[in-house]
Image 1 (cartoon, rainbow over the protein chains, first blue to last red):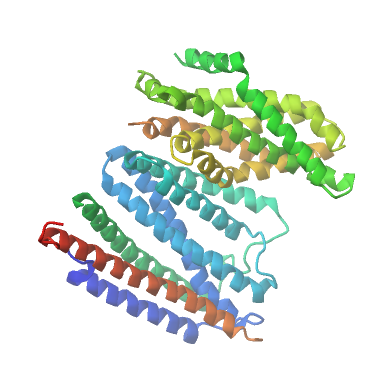
Image 2: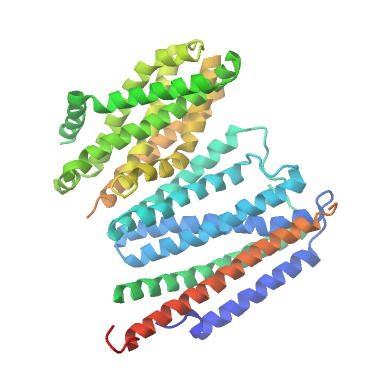
Length: 223
Length: 220
Length: 49
């Protein structure tokens, strides 16, 4: 077992992604237009939405890992599911923290029952249950199965949750920045760039976390 | 085979009536607490009534599902049930159906106290109200049976079950409150059509998912 | 306040701080685990305890 950053690909990947993230921030500060009435607060969107995207992507991977775990009965997929669940929850927490910070200047109050934020909150709560179950679930072999099942159920529920929250309070429109395709290209292109960079960062984080979890289980097994 | 299982579930319950009785009493105490703790005029209560009803149903469903699954925890009957040569998805289906029956019975008994304690009028279209309530029960029980299959054999199962269940079932609660609210007021079908669609989607999807996953969940 | 720069700064600090903190935490966990593993393999308490 070697450290993750022992091999050249990982080190260069990390360096590249760190550089891209810095470039991303520079790009947002320098090259994006100032939206009237929102000024600097609008630029939060370049970080908030990619975080949400990465969070949902991660939870999707938990579902896929759960399905593959049941099909192939390989513990590797359990590790992938756990890593994706953890990282997904980190990014969803960021969404739930940066959302209100963005909301205060834009809408005047920190929380409204906007569909996507509410879906994020519900999903976050489901995953608190996921981690509680991982800890208190009992025998480890059973827990792996339960965790895979919860991962699948959670993401299957997401579209249903989203639709019901969307029609729940029809007077609340989505984020002001909703219609992506209608954004002018000075906003759209940096946004897509930020999105891709966040996705690459996520892949690196996922691989790293899988690596660390596997070391952990091997050390535990030896003990 | 499936009907044998189902008969067993209902028969055990019929003998002791443990589950429906505990659900009923718990439901009554919740409604009493709602009535006592509401500091507002009857018109406002009428607006909140659908929500209160479904909150009560949710808590009672947790109790009910907890009881039906813990039957098998005692004497480790669950392992025997699993080792039987049957499709384990059937276990999910029987728990779903029996839970649905118990919930419906409890709701039938609690309807009159509910309307009388909170001093609200009966809905103008009772058959539609009953029909939609049945469907909503079905949806709640689908998710609840699936989640308890997972949570019941864990430690801290009494805590884990609601924690996992409540966020997962939140779209059903939203839809249920909207449907019941519309029906109480007498809104036309088109108003709550979408919510009915959501309920039906939940029933279909979680029914399928539960049936499929139960096999994998209960492997040893 | 009018240009909301402080909100922008707060968000970016939180996001990048969290990501950086995550990497640092993973590095420390990894180091600790690999040290434990090395000690196990080489035998820390050679006197048998």
